[in-house]
Image 1 (cartoon, rainbow, N blue to C red):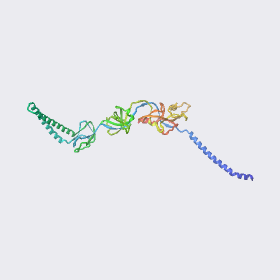
Image 2: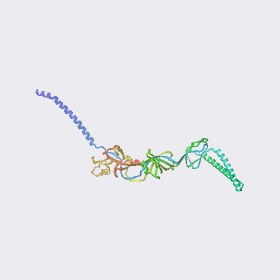
Image 3: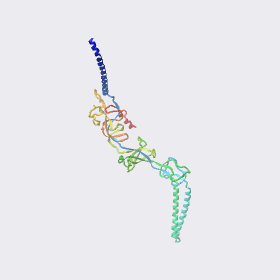
Length: 402
């Protein structure tokens, strides 16, 4: 009976110990499970990302200065009249090729024609009086003052004829140069005043292209330098040369105005068009350049992802282009029998950039010949990630073909 009473008193304590043991086991199991999950993900091998790459090597670099300009005709003018009058005749049609000296329009000049006939008759009479006075003077029966008077009258009559002839010439609109004339802005019978525009005349065989470049590029420009011009950046089909450089830099925009003369044999360029301009600079050799898609810009600087054999992380693994003695190309070679291919990984390499031209960017430091650099898809990568090289479809090659 005493034992039963003792066990009855111990029973609550035993139940409490059992409950504590079960709770402790559950807590330990949860901690153990979380640790195993963490260890599993920490040691899990991520699948290699497939990337396209390019091999760094020195190449020829043709630097250019890119700009946007406006095309103008080498000779272009809005034709107007100097005298008022009524339009009598229009001798041109829209988009007609005209030659220098062609009469384009005639104003009514009937009054001036009559005045000219009268002036010419007066001039003939004045000339006869002058000759008669000279004859009498040589015979000794005429006065010298009579000769002077008739000569002045003759010269005045000649001047009047010349004045009326100039007025008649101004009643005609003549092409000042050869070119293409635009749409007529007048009608037969219309009364014109000086300054009224008749039509526009443009010489489209040779064009002037005005554009601006930053002041830093002023030292690279010179008269006679070659330029190419086009309506799009991918189709620069018009060739020309620089014929003028403004010696003054705009203090507001810090830009320099430049003018180029461009041949336009097919007349595809029209005055007023926006055009792409590329100033061609001398060719340079042994320049390291990459596609702009290979460079990533961040707050800490510009960098690229270099593909190298995987190495264990350590304090010596700084992102330096010269830190690996074995290249990715060597590691990616087919291993010998019984050997396993070394895995490849990507590492950040910070670079310094120079000039940019036609989708290429110059790398002044950070890379050396033979380095393998990822040229697309960097947003899917992180330092140390395993990669597999597949250059079957290379974005850089596709861009060059386009």
